[in-house]
Image (cartoon, rainbow, N blue to C red; front, top):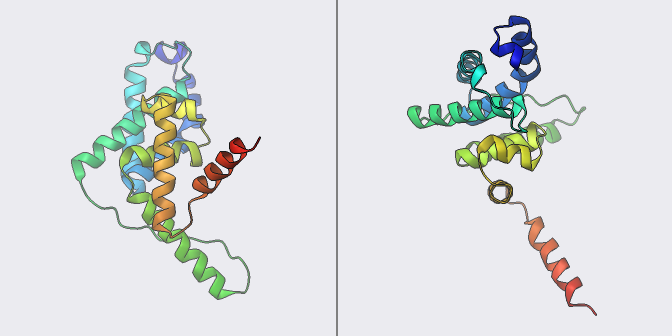
Length: 186
């Protein structure tokens, strides 16, 4: 990051190649369309370029800082626009000759995307960072500026809302009951 702060375009190019794909996915999940996501990521990268000298490592990774900028800009964008994004056409890979299974898979994917799109912004960001971008709970918490326990709560609420929207049973309650029963045993 010191090279970027010194104006090294090669270092900045390396940073962008490494992080832009994930940033685009996170922004698109929050704002609901690729065009706005691209603008948000471009603005975020411009902010990183201009303020690279302000970055204080303090144990944080550059990617975490960049994700936080992207998430904050995406949430601000949604608040300003206050629109419901159109559902993008979902492409489901050819799973074989069974058209009914393909239709059911497409329907489930569309319902899941709609359920995720309906989540509050922080839950959507938490789900996107942990489930789609592969960040740990601690890294995602750092990106959103919340505690790890708050991040875990956001994830639980997001998953519960998606399951409810898809009429799926709660898995966590069965596990909790199992643990309670195990504790009651001598």
